[in-house]
Image (cartoon, rainbow, N blue to C red):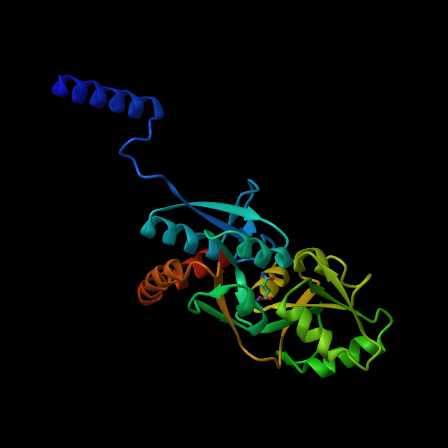
Amino acid sequence: MKKILTLILAAAMLTGCIALASCGKTEEKVLNVYTNAGFAPYEYLDENGKVVGVDIDVVNYIGEKLGYKVIISDIDFDAILNEVAKDKFAVGAAGMSKKAERDEIALASDVYATSVQYIIAPTGTFEGEQVALADAVAYIAASGIKSIGVQKGTTGADLVGGAIEGTEAKTIEYSNAIIASQDIGSSVGAVVIDKMPAESICKDNENLQCWALDAEMESYVMYFNKDNADLVKQVNDVLKQMIADGLIDQYTVKHSS
Ligand code: GLN
């Protein structure tokens, strides 16, 4: 009798498994990636409107290595950290510079790239290849337009915000530098954004030129949820390997050409 009962029970469990179609399978792990696709070569839209770029290749590689399905969401840059703070399996991958204020909200990965702020202005505006931020601000303050375009919530916005204090110059905040640069010569005299995205904008427009600013070097990290230090540790191991193998350089070349 006992045997029969055990058999019935086993059969019921088996059919239960079939009905649920999940028995024996581990649930799929998902990594929710937040980015802002107006920042080539790190993240941009390809001709089909798909989000691609260095950061996307990096997170896809990490997802594959660690067994996560990667879901990319293209949102405003200044909304990324909030999303990361809400979800244990979220990550901001958006050429995000490591910053003390951000470290309070989220957990930074190891550094995977570096950058510096650039200024985009009409061709021939400044001499040489580098401009002092104070000189650039003085130039804009003395010009007719008086505004500098920045991307909302970025280190570039902070930098320019500090530099215009006590001058006649103002900033106009945009959702990304591509849109901001379309206003150069009308509502803004120049745009400040990270080196490679600036170069990508200048490359596509012969009326615009890029200059390096005399600003501090910035380090790109990915920001994770504070409750997921385990994941950050695993990600850092993969990142180390990727850097050693030259993979990140390879992705950067691929998305810059
Ligand atoms: N590196 C800059 C920052 O972290 C800009 C990033 C971006 O615009 N995607 O603020």
